[in-house]
Image (cartoon, rainbow, N blue to C red; front, side, top):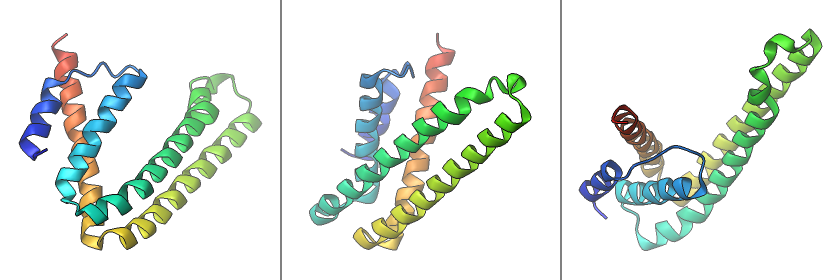
Length: 145
């Protein structure tokens, strides 16, 4: 799929951004196509890259859920927390942030052995580009309703 088709597909696809499984599957499918196009993987690179990347994404999502369920979901009620509860919540937040940083570092070390350093940097840039395009599409769809 070339870049032009991906962009058209992004623009033509309406995202409700509800946490429906099919919406996230659609987004992930678009993300895979986008990254594949941007990084121009050889067959060998693709075979080696996707298992490492998918494992990283699963771990990252687990940490995000943990953060939301154990920290962010409780922050909205910060006014009702005791100081001790707030200290514990803050410590947990810091711990999760450190886990995320360690996961990111580990992933970058692993992936840069699977693909080149240049493609690793291109991956980071491509993920940011994809997020920007997705948010742009979301704002356009939200504004049109």
